[in-house]
Each structure stands twice: as C-alpha cells, then as structure tokens.
Amino acid sequence: MINFTKRLTSVFCAVFLVALGCVTFSAESRQKLTDDANLLSRTEQNEITQMLEDASAQTDWDVIIYTNYNYIDEYDIEDYTNEYYDNHNYGIGDQKSGIILNIDMGSREMYVITKGETMYYISDERNDDMLDSIQAELISGDYYEAAETFVKYTVNYYEQGKPTSGTFTNVKINEKKDHPIRYSLIHYGIPSFIAGAIISLVTVFIIYRKYKNNGKKNIYDLEANSKTMLTTSNDIFLTKSVSVTTIQSDSSSSGGGHSGGGGGSSHGGGGRSF
Image (tube, rainbow, N blue to C red; front, side, top):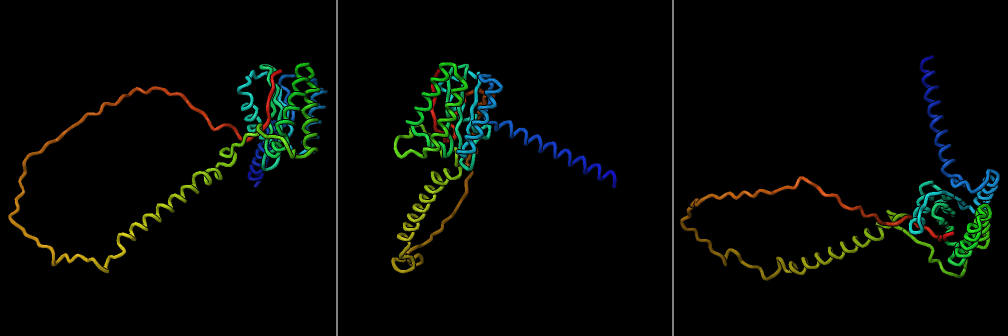
C-alpha cells in the first residue's frame, strides 16, 4: 500500500511539472513585448509592456511589439511578421484579433500586421498615418516614442470605431488557409455536386428516350425473322508467337526545385523603411 502511494505521488508530481512547463512556455510565447534588439532600457521595457497590456485589455486585441536584428528585407518582412504572429499563437477570440509592430534593426525595416477584427478598424488612410508617425520616430532614433506612438494610434483607432469611409486595400484575405474545410466545400464540393446532378439527369433522360417504347411497339420478332445454319466446324492451330520487350530503367534520379505557394493567413497592415 505504501509503495502504491509513493508511485501515485510520483506520477502526480510529474504531471504537475509538465503542466507547469506548458504554462510557462505559453506565457513566454505570448509576451506583449519582445525586445531582442535591446532598443529599450529595463525601465522602458516595463513601461511599454504595461501600455501593451492596458491596450489589449481595452481593445480586446492582442497588441504586440517585436524588435530584432533578423535582417529581413522589404520583400519578405510582411510574410515573416505574419508568420511570427501566427506561430507564437497571438490573437484574442475566435478571429485571433490583434496587431503587431515588427522593428528589424538589421534591415532597417518596420512592418505592422493587423489580424481578425482589427483589420477592419484600420483603413488605408489610418494605416498610412500610423506608419508615417512611427517611421519618423524610428528615423530619429526615438525607439521608446515609436513604441508609444504605435500603442496610442492603436487605442485611438479602436475608440473611433470602424471607419465609414476610405479604402482597405491593405487587407488581404486568404480564406483557403483560414477556413480550409469551408473553402473546399464552396469551391469544390458544391460545384462537383451540381455537375454530378446534371450528368445524372442527362443520363436518365437519354436512357428514358431510348427505351421508352420497350415492350409496347416496334418489337422485333427474333424467332420469326432469324435462322441459324451450322456446317462442319474445324479448329486449325497455325503457330504461336511470343514477343518480349525489355524496358530500360534509369536508376539515377535528378533533383528538382521546390515550389511554395498559398501565402499566409488573412491580415492587413503595411511597412516602411527607416
């Protein structure tokens, strides 16, 4: 009985440690500020983190800042930032709503990504205003002010509500990646069902037209109009021929290029150099 109790206690402790590790990992991967470029002092990091947490609580969006020296160029930083957001499980609610500012000091590029409900609060006009203001602070080397400006614009746009005018060309929807099952049903399942139904109806109609008089009229009297005559039948074996073809197989294989595609999940936003 004592041994059983010890084993049960050991199992409980192991499960508890694993759960604690998972919670710790989740907290670390979802932190609001990741200042890998060390642009801010410890005090400034704490202040910006508090701003991000307050903004997230007020807007119900995940408000994130990430600084680094990744040297991602202007052509790839959009996809990189979008994947960074997704891979770190950011986002609040079913739509994973949120906004992230990525500052790459290596390539001197910055990018803002909006996700979920946040995409429809930030029109092209609002997006440009925010990016221009952040860019100006970064060019001046005022990194704390750049982070603060990002947070203030985000909260301000939330308080203003969804714009009733303007354009949203910055928003890119990828329903195939966001909702693969629904996309497959709409784009493949329903058309296939309709096509199958049409083919079935046409086939039934043709068969009906062809056999509609079967058993009623125009019946051919096979017994009265046919005659079978059998004469001597002989089977003569002439010869046998076997043809063999050898198929050469190439044991070597050549490598091919890999083609990627599909794009990232739906998002909005834009970027600037500084």
